[in-house]
Length: 104
Image 1 (spheres, helix red, strand yellow):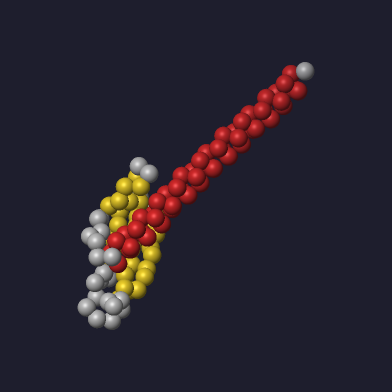
Image 2 (cartoon, rainbow, N blue to C red):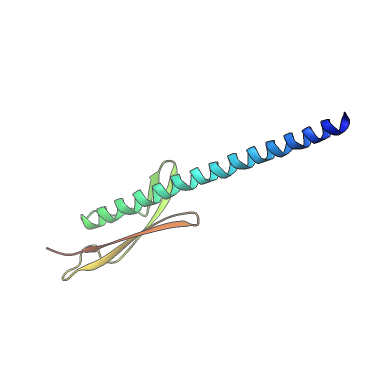
């Protein structure tokens, strides 16, 4: 009957909407995981470059995105140890990593 057809179409529409919503949610989650991976790698690389005396660029390309790098602290302290923090950011997402640099 017409009622059964309408109910089945409504259930089909609900199923399609739920499926599309799940796809969009998991795609966004995967994108964020990729960005966090790039931020972690970029901050770690910048900190390693700083500690080895290399010039740290202000941006690093990672997987097609441009990650901004900011270093806080002296990478070459004259005496004593110094805490250096590398901050990697992309859009409104950022990641910080810190380490101590000591002249030996």
